[in-house]
Image (cartoon, rainbow, N blue to C red):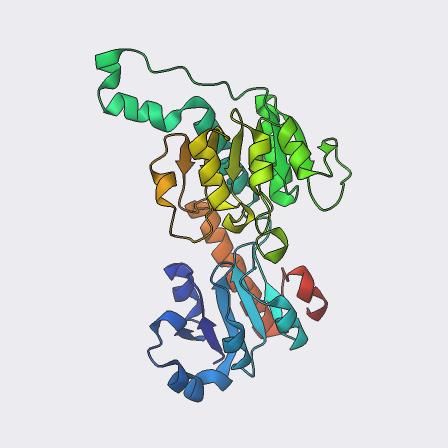
Length: 317
C-alpha cells in the first residue's frame, strides 16, 4: 500500500477516507522525525497538506519517492512548487469549489461593517436598547463603489453577487481583463476612488503587504477594508494604526498575518469584524474539498493523472 504523509491540518473525515487506500502517517503525531524518516521515508509517495501549513522544503527533500502533493484548498503558497516541479512532483489544489462561499463571506463582512450588525447585537443583549432607546444609526450598504483586489474566480463570483446591492464595481490586478468593470492600474488610485476595498489575492512574496499604509490611508476615514484572501496581503501593523487613529473607518477580516494569532488591538476595536479564517467553512463546501483531494490522489494512484493540478505543475499531469 502506498504511503501518504499528512503534513498539515485537514479534516478528520479526510483522514478516515484516505486510510482505506493509503498507509497514513500524520506529521504532527510523529515524535521522532529522524527515526520515522529512516523507517518510512522511502515508502511515502503522496502528501496532503493545506496552503498555510504547506510542506517544508527540507522534509520534501527527504522523501525520495514523493510523486504528488495534494493541497486542501485553493491557495498553495506554503508549498515550494518550483522545487516540486523540478523533481517531477505534481501539486494539486481545489479551485472553484470555494468560490461562492468565500464571495458570500466577503459580502457578509461588508454588510456587518456597514449595518453595525455586531454592535447592534451587543446593544440588544446588553439591555442598552431597553435602557437608552434606539441604537445609533448605521450606513447603507447599497450603491457603494467597491474595488476588488484580485478579479479571479472568487473575485468574479463576488462581483456578480454585489450587483444585487447596486454596487459600482472596479478592480485592480496584474493585467486588465475583458470584463465590463473599470480597471485601475494603480491600487492606490482605486482605493482613493472606492468606498470599499475587498482583497481576494493569493499569498506569497509577490503579494506581501500589497495593501500597505498608502493604500489603507487612500481608502480614508469613511472607507472599509475587507480581506478574505490571505493575511500577508495586508500590512497588519499599518492597518491597526489606521483604524486606531481614524485614518480608516472600518475593517472586516477573515485572515491574518500570523494565524491563529490576532493583534490584541483588533480584538478591542468596535469598528472591526473578525472571523477565524472561515470564508469557506460550511459543511457542504468542506465535504466537496475533501472529495476533490481524495479524487486527485486516487486517480493518480490508479492512472497517473489528476483533475486539478496547479498551473506550475500542470505540464506533469
